[in-house]
Image (cartoon, rainbow, N blue to C red; front, side):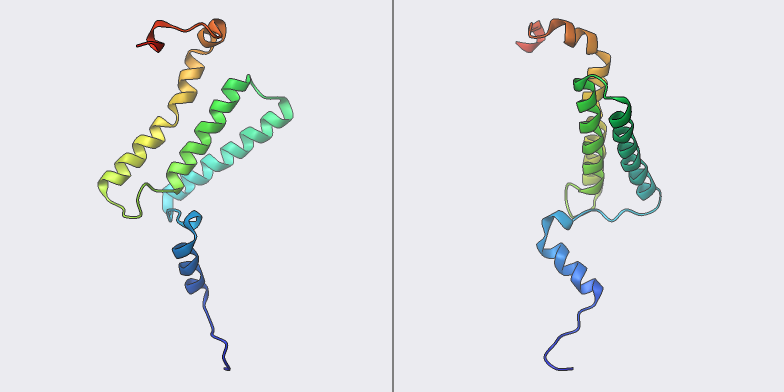
Length: 125
């Protein structure tokens, strides 16, 4: 071998993870990997369905999209590179909280649409 250095695939991946912050995803295994794959496929199918049959009301459509994305983000990008009980618990709390906007809008859709611009008393609270 002359002056060329042979680098294997593992060294390349380690270098990428070291310098590229977007590549620092959680390594998923087992049932968690299947769950995240299912959520991502469900999101893709939802968007394909709505592109063919039309989207629901914009506010509902957006909240579904944001909830899907937040759940995937919190599954794939951990709060910390160190895995301990607190970070896992906090990630689970964030995953559960990311579904709340959709549930709130779905439950209060008619009230939100009908008051359009009229503030409620709890806004000032």
